[in-house]
Amino acid sequence: MLTFPQTQTQDPSGSVMTARTMAWALERLNLGQCVALASVVESQGSVPGKVGAKIAVSENGERHGTVGGAGLEEKVISHLNDIINSDASPGIHRFQLRKEAMQNTSKGIEATPLNSLCGGVVTIVSEFLNASPHILLAGGGHCAIAIGKMAHVLDWRISIMDTREEYVSENHHPKAIERIHSSPESFLERENPKSLARFTHILIMGHDWAIDQNLLTGILSMMDDKEWSTTVGTIGSKAKWNSFSTAAKQIGIKTSILNQILCPIGVDISAESPEEIAIAVCAQIIDERARILRGEAKIKHTGWRSTQTD
Figure: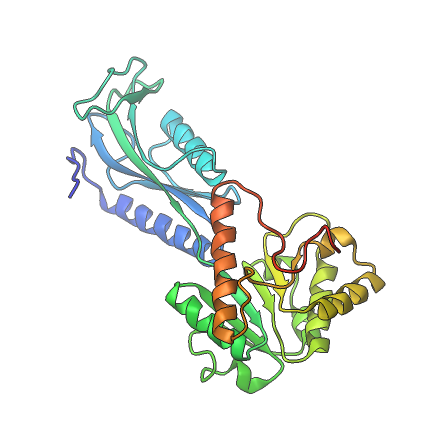
């Protein structure tokens, strides 16, 4: 096991600050935000940041904690922002807190010199914390139950919504963290784009096409030409999508907004059973998340539908 010598000790107030920073980072993850985190793991000589000190930066640019301030902190914050933007990779970084750094430290890791008079050496480990998906399953039937079971295995969060009370019950969805027994109209009256952003994915798969259509057009009305961070998709055949898109256009929804909707959801594996559909849907979410981490564009549609054929 890799260990680091600790030439500085963490004082009680620093421990409290570290705990608060971790709690802040976990809170952001629960909100569906990615976080980049840096921790001081070794310090030698005179340094401002003690071992255990942490700083976290969210994808929204918010930050919490400190690794000592001044030029060191500026460098670390810049690095954490680069990690979130996929312009840098997490890892181990060593900083020499004086203008002329040694070419190499005793461990053979080159130190970045900083314009400081402290004279010590600080080793920082940075990491990327990717929020688990939080999926709203709008419709609690067989496909939603299958997706919920797979999501539990993947450690994803599930919320369930249905007009039928029994289909949002613990009996049908024991792992759901939010149960919404509501019509689309009542649900949308309580929601707005900011509140809906708690979901990474909204998957519409109800038992009644009219309910699904009302929910989808209501969500579309909240969207603008800027791409949503929340992925919205629906199970649907060509006929169902034609009905949805016609209804949307009749209320003034632009094609650019319609093109943000996934229909049908799931990778194209000719899935038929609820379990096969769950595999296809979860695979699509995994692929989407991997593409985002690589800095690639999301695949908009699979199967029979593409933006070119609409």
